Amino acid sequence: MVLFLFLGALIGITSVIFAMQNTAIVTLTFFDWQVAAPLAVIVLGSAALGIGMTLLAMLVRIISDALNEYTLRREERKAETAVVYETGTTEERRVSA
Image 1 (cartoon, rainbow, N blue to C red):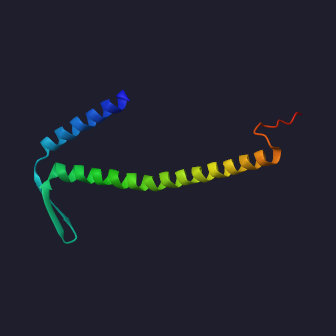
Image 2: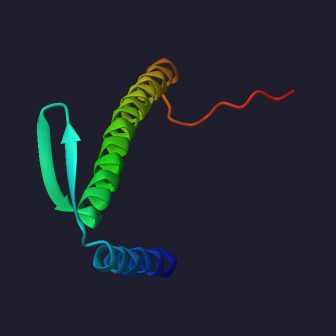
């Protein structure tokens, strides 16, 4: 936990220093759109957009995994209920070899 706090502070300090040193106004052109902003804003905004898109892509996988886990747990409960119904007990039966 302390490591994440330290890394977050380090990244924050580095970002502030980067922004203070790159104040030149640049023009960003994309097809017919033009945006004039400080270089630091353009670079940090691009990085934030990349992080956001990556998290969005990861969210799809996280939801898929959660749904699969839910399905497996539901099937496990059904199987346990079937065993209880057939045996009339919740205890495990062990087969001796």
